[in-house]
Amino acid sequence: MKIATWNINGVKARIETLLEWLKEASPDVACLQEIKSIDENFPRQPFEDLGYNLETHGQKGFNGVALFSKSPLEDIQRGLPGNAEDSQARYIEASVSAEAGSVRIGCLYLPNGNPLGTEKFPYKIEWMDRLIAHAEKRVAEETPFLLLGDYNVIPDPVDAKNSENWLDDALFQPESRQRFRALTHLGLTEVVRSCTQADETYTFWDYQAGAWQKNNGVRIDHILTSPQATDLMIGCGIDKHVRGWEKPSDHVPVWVNLAA
DNA sequence: ATGCCTTGTCGCACAAGA
Image (tube, rainbow, N blue to C red; front, side):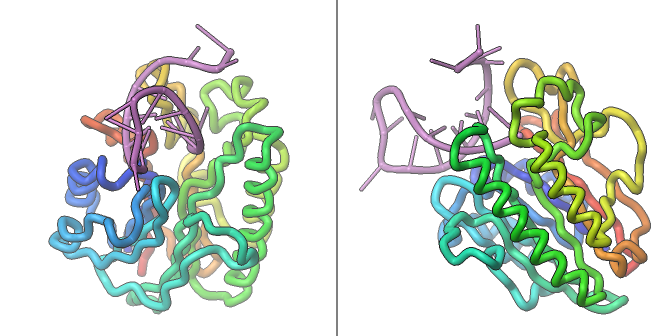
């Protein structure tokens, strides 16, 4: 079972690019972020025609997440628990059936948190604390569970081409990085680092200042797996070439393959 | 560098992104 995550930066602007990647990569499950669409206006037809079941959790203009799956999505949960006042659409979770049993999949778009000194950064930290609490609950269930998405966290200096340029950025603050590590301390495995130790492994390149041409990237899209999911892991990858396509997102897909 | 792009918005410039 191939499970992927991709921040597509607007589904309506990315229909053709997304279709091309789905046909090429053929993920069993795709977690999408920044759909930038309300559920009623999501362009479902072209993706359903490819054979995907869709569940969306959107809002007007910004944010928004979606799950695509070749097999039915069950027990859909919209929103991250723990704060009834949070109206931003950043989390959707569902189960899919596999040969090895049910797999629970969480798709997240973690708050960016910039600029520092505004209410945006404490919102990011509060959101991460809730994510840790929710993940702890799921890990305790001792079943296959994955958390995929745009974490907006650069875990370590090696995860940026020029980490010194990110010292005053919310993505690289000690508070953000500590909480990302806290997720792994629950027993979750960070998939890409467990699959590859290669340098210059990035998932995002800014549209500005020729970042892609200079390979001035950062690694901020991650997949975390519970022990029972990690036991099934047989491979992972980053579809870097997609960043070079026509009308690309500024992020590229990241995927994991499970023996399930 | 409050810059550089890209997307969405009840647009006719601006917010948000990272």
